[in-house]
Image (cartoon, rainbow, N blue to C red; front, side):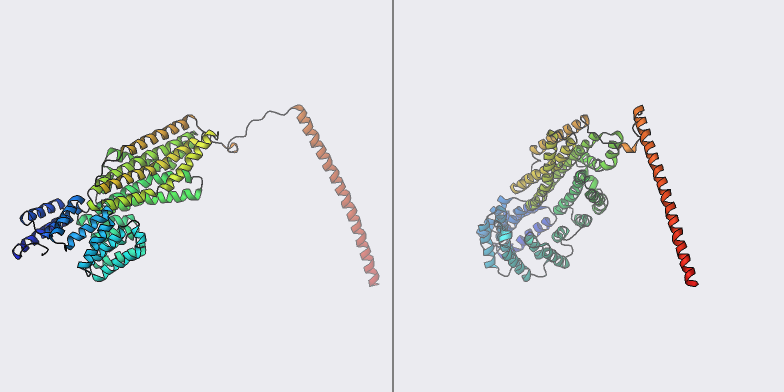
Length: 528
């Protein structure tokens, strides 16, 4: 049976339906493409090509059940349908059914051993096994390089190979592969996305690449997702670096490094990313909700605390004001994290099949926050221990700093994990209520510490040498007499020493005259 499942009279009409569907898919109008294919199936229900095309389109919109049903219909009509087998490999890999993925990939290799897609799908099946990227690394590389050897001039094949090798190959190898693909097709969107992640060093350059892609295709969800992530991540770093700066005050070199990093981050965000991104993108991203705008404003205000709060603290001698800084930074970063997560969920929902990949990347990035959680946990422990051991009220601001370290990092991990689970289910609801409860409870605790610091303010030690000498009581008469006697004894002793010295000088002069006379007499005797 032919791929179309029809005679030559119907072949041209089926091809036109598939071409129209492909064109609609290229413009991102997937629902219309599905409608077009279903219209064709109404007239040609025995066409395996149309069922295979429908399976792919349903997979693209993340409807796994409909995609599997359509692929099975195509294979029932034509067991040798490469398109349907390819969709089955992708479905089984996503579902974690490694055996089914291998069966479909092996069937493709039997039917078309010289087709690059067959080897790429075999690599996907190997990578889809538990710990497959680590355990099957050499076999995955072999299958990928075999596919590229069969089609060395195809940028699309290189792009698929780069996606499979991500997490398997090293960064240098991946960058070299992406560079080869871009040399073949400099406008390939998939390769440009990989390039922005793999070997573009500056977020400003990345934003430029992503903006050019959005200008060419406004429906490019991957580019919109990455650009939004850059903006929210850079925005989150503003209060995060300010929190690090509070602990870095104990070490001048570390404080200077944090200050430089903060300046670079703000400059990159408000200048380089803003200029590279589409016009007004930064303003629209920050203004998605009143809470998002509030978080951004508090973040910039909190980042300026060394210039604003420290002079006031030392001028008014109210060190309890320092506890307000971590409170502001905590509220700011939590609001920014919540706003960024809400925007990420909206964009992930539009990515379809690729949503899980991006959600997994966001969760991996959030898990790096365990470093902050560890540092903040130590700060909280030290603050609590010092407070209960009577170390003083300085421990209250220290505890607030610990909360500002721990809570935003925990919040990111919880939200990214929930988003990843939703992407796997194909359902991305609003952020969980537990996350908002955590933010509210932590803010209340930090506010309590700040109020306690203001009421139980520590004392700033003042150097007495910088001001007037303290007043002293006048000495008593006995002390004066005793001091006078000591002074008279000192003067008398000094006079005696002077007289002894004069007598010694006179004796030395007489001895010197005698020696001189002896020398003169001896000289005269020698001359005579």
